[in-house]
Length: 216
Ligand code: ATP
Image (cartoon, rainbow, N blue to C red; front, side, top):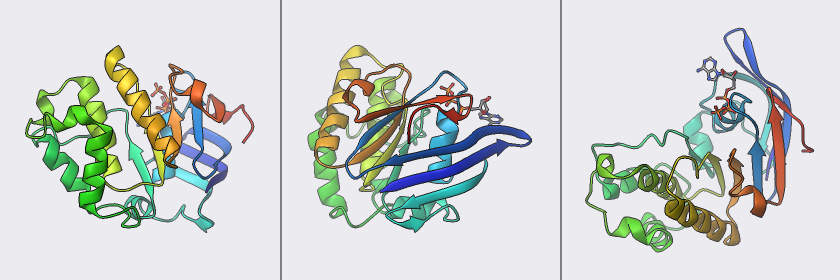
């Protein structure tokens, strides 16, 4: 489904990724672990097309996508949730969700069907549809960020620390929602340090100073 070979990335002269190779199969949950600064965020950002200067081969469903802009990668079924969530904090929950509805893949049902599915997955959000995102807790915002990406109908989710810095109750809700999505066949590549999803993963890869230590 996704395969990466010889991926290098640079911030100016400083190289952050060195010949990274990995693959994610259909419906697979793959976790990337590594210390702060190991390059996890840089790797996910390079895959979605918003990272620093990068070179290497990235294939998605057999097509080479390294020259595609980020919006084309999203339309092809790649969904990304950044560590810092990137919500429109002045807009309501509902507005944040609908604003994403047109930017993704039409293969995964209509926007209305995707909205119903997101509400079923996150009933907590249903009770706060008209609340500005700025008035939500960090964990609720994290949920909204994932829900917003799901509105694009992704086939592969790239998640940067989805369970980091949120309350234990919301960690459990987030984990359960992600495992439900995995059961429904959504593939995931998750960067995390806290091993919440790692224990459910098909494979755990380790990134050390920009180099992949685990097998691809
Ligand atoms: P964390 O868990 O702390 O987010 P990470 O594993 O995601 O860490 P990255 O954020 O990808 O690691 O950082 C990889 C390397 O690239 C680090 O050496 C970091 O200092 C550097 N780096 C990250 N962002 C930038 C930037 N915008 N400009 C310059 N260097 C950067």
